[in-house]
Image (cartoon, rainbow, N blue to C red; front, side, top):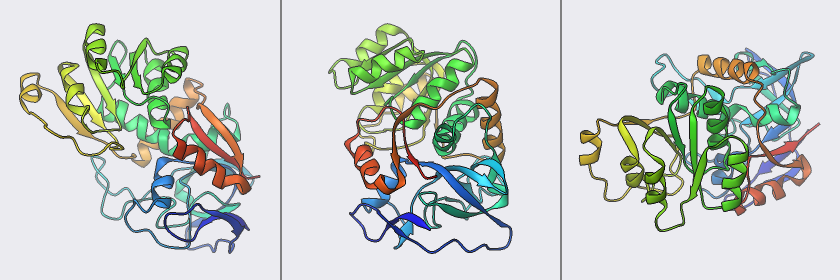
Length: 320
């Protein structure tokens, strides 16, 4: 079969022949119709991920055909027994096991689910990892309901956009931040009430003028994280699902305890949350936002697109 294979660190994956997957007990073969990238894939190519091995076929997101049925793949493997946190055997598809950036994949039968009928192959491929992450962060951890005021940082990435779409679907009011005025305008067109450019020196002051927030969904961390706490209403939930900017400096607990805030970490999600997420997407007829579509053989260009950081939505690879 053909696949995108990463053979060494600090390089782009190469489109080449790879061995067909071999079935283990309890596994099935999925013929991939479309796959999608996540920042996780890019970080692996840059050597910024633990447990990297070579050669490896990356990719956590995928949708395809299994035994004549249209399916999507849940990339969260071996969550464990406690729904509050993943167990020691938890892993994400695409490292250490081969992922979806290939024509076929062997996957435990328990990881495949019917594709929502309203989604195209490209949309279905864009959904799993970011959709699951956003669902758990927003609903399980953030407890979002109608009327909540939600702030989502770094709009344009897959998780942030799904969080926007999911929050709007339940009747929440959503505000967003971005380093791009164009992305802010596009998010408002999707239903955001407003947004600010976090490169402006007074971005937090602009948001203070908009009023406090019940929920903050953040995937960046960094110096701005402390300012997010100041934007919260008393009793708000701040959910962190990533740290692309890095450590949080000069964190002060005073505002945390005085406002009775909850700061919550969130990673991926359980099997039950994946099922709930698919049902939610189907019920509300949510269509994932797609940035660009590349063929599998042009996968290196897809990685370059992600590294540039200009995407608004998911980067998808057409396989079959």
